[in-house]
Length: 149
Image (cartoon, rainbow, N blue to C red):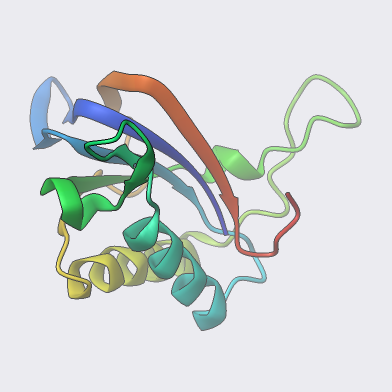
């Protein structure tokens, strides 16, 4: 499982011109599910997303998690995080999960983060979405449950 976590002042998702989700301060998480992902990968993402300490404390150091700032998470499914362009210019998505597995694990990540006491909103699986955000920093963290980076 791969994620791009962006610290935001606000973020929203629109489908067919209609806003379906929005948050204020928190994380926009673009989440990709791999073909070989399972419960361990979900657990890793839930732990990392809910525990990331990338908000500034009173001393100006990144030490606060979402709970320390009353932050929320907007999770957007993004299978293109598994696009492989090493052999050309057109991405191959063979490493991405099937739509069924992708949806299941995406929803499990959202539920897991919510179970940590964090407000969670989502995008819409297998839909064309417009994602709007105001980066804070910008601060962007890459996560890989297989620890490839």
